[in-house]
Image 1 (cartoon, helix red, strand yellow):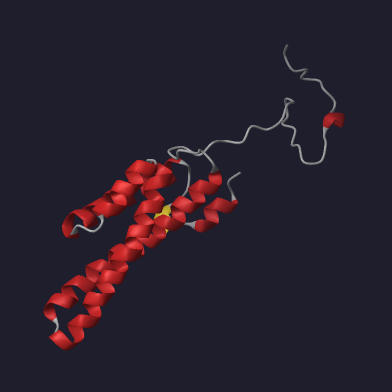
Image 2 (image 1 turned 90 degrees about the vertical axis):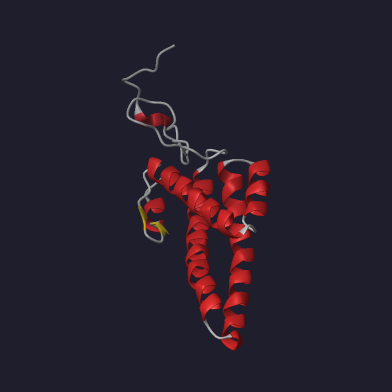
Length: 153
């Protein structure tokens, strides 16, 4: 049975929004995320920001660990190691929300391989950027603009 277009606004109850043509408002689902929830989209944006920071720290610390004298290179080698551990966490969390649990575990393990791990992080960052942009979130150099999430449902 069709909705009455001349229905009075007396059906409005607190907590329910009534669109112009009657019936409750259907909230839009997030595109590209397994759960389809906007809260997970915000988590993807936060994980992407952390992943971008880890990529930058790895790109800075590894060449410095190779080129500096041995006394100071140890500090950058340790930094590279701890950033690698942190990037494993971000890759795992991001891959779980985008691809699933098994793919998240495989992606977390592959991060430990030096060059392949960096390529995987860049590919996952690109996928997160595509997901965020397809949902109307602006993405800049350091990740998503978090102010855009306040405008979404």
